[in-house]
Length: 353
Ligand code: NAD
Ligand code: DAU
Image: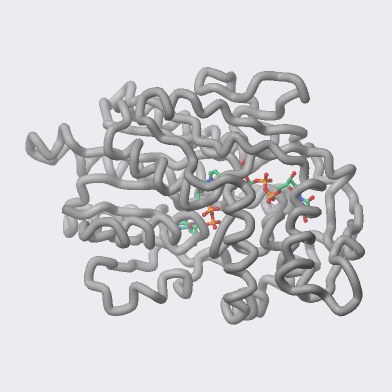
């Protein structure tokens, strides 16, 4: 038996592949285009491990997908591959439509062909697991209840609109063709291998370099943070025992404003790697807000707990400490990510703010 993972060289995908192979001998066929966000260094510990088969390729390449599906006959496809950064979607939405919408469509069609040709009982046991986001639900008022699975879709950014479109395609492929799908909508992840364009790793990396810590607008936007290892365990549970055609929200029961997050990161760095020039909070700067910035996300994760018994294992205190320690111990990973094209992105997003 084999699972096919798309986007397994990215932040969450690589954590998922590493966790999967730490707990199971079932091989992983990992298809990743290695965009700026894909990094094979995340998977360096699997070098020479026959259970990990890496293929560099695009989910938009139908011939490649057909070959991989026919050659490896995966029992499940876990679809992580996406353009994932909201700010990049504002600067250049085209790539988001191409990968998140057209790519997911292409993958669904290839998987449908593969699944249709499977004999029973493989056909009945097959699963297509779509990894999605809480951002599809839009923005919550300060006192509104957290997102449940029945919350209306109200995406506000090109990124969230493209993910919402992909969720709808997955839903339709189940309703129309009977493809056995599972969808999970997760809140903000943090942890090892997080690309430093996103809030938490950017703050760690900038603070250590003595650079400004740019908080968008008033910094009172709220996100619900989940340690990436907990997201991976939730996906494993849903894949194993989730009801076909259902969606499951995954969250950390951990709402924090961006200001709180930055202060917590600074305090941990003050403790673990004190700066010579005083507390890291001195580097905080408020910059121009993100256009269309969603004010608050919060996940009601009771369904996955009720049906599958899943709850996050990490508290924010334990998860963020592990994360900061990981970045401090992996300066080589940070240095290689910070080279090259990433510098152009920093200029594009922050110079005019
Ligand atoms: P990421 O940007 O770190 O990684 C995405 C990966 O997909 C990269 O390895 C990239 O090379 C690959 N990829 C991109 N386009 C591709 C294509 N056309 N074909 C094949 N591979 C391609 O993203 P992430 O943060 O790891 O997110 C993974 C998934 O989880 C995404 O679908 C995202 O929407 C979802 N999600 C992320 C979060 C979060 O907080 N990061 C929260 C909820 C859901
Ligand atoms: O909610 C899940 C989503 O979380 C995922 O679907 C996305 O893939 C993931 O990127 C993330 O989206 P956000 O936009 O919430 O994450 P980001 O880390 O970009 O920003 C978190 C918050 O911090 C957001 O309110 C914007 C703010 N921010 C971000 C950056 C990069 C800043 O204030 N300054 C910054 O420099």
